[in-house]
Amino acid sequence: MKRAVALTLSTLFILSFFLISPSSSMDLNPADSCWDNWERCRSRALESDMGVIRTTLALTLCDIALANCLLKAT
Image 1 (spheres, rainbow, N blue to C red):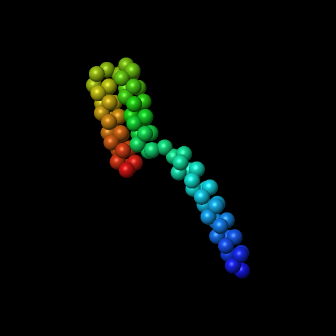
Image 2: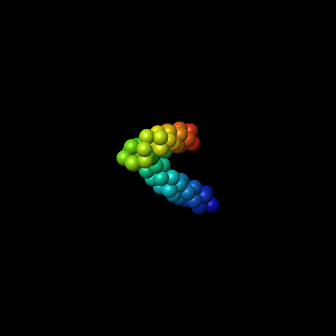
Image 3: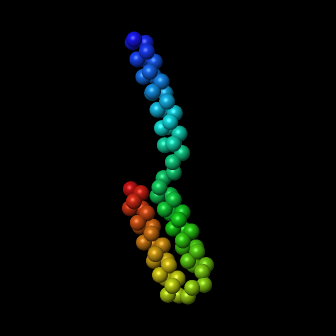
């Protein structure tokens, strides 16, 4: 009985290690994706041909979205 319990516990430990470890090591920092999205948003806003006011509003929305994303990431 002790051997079965030990085998079960060791199997659970090994499985949990392999199931949790790769996903945690492969996850990117959420803040990195926020900054990547912000850079993409700014470049699209600056490359657009929307005029000064709309471009300014688009850049402001990019900054607000960045702040929102960073607050959710922490």
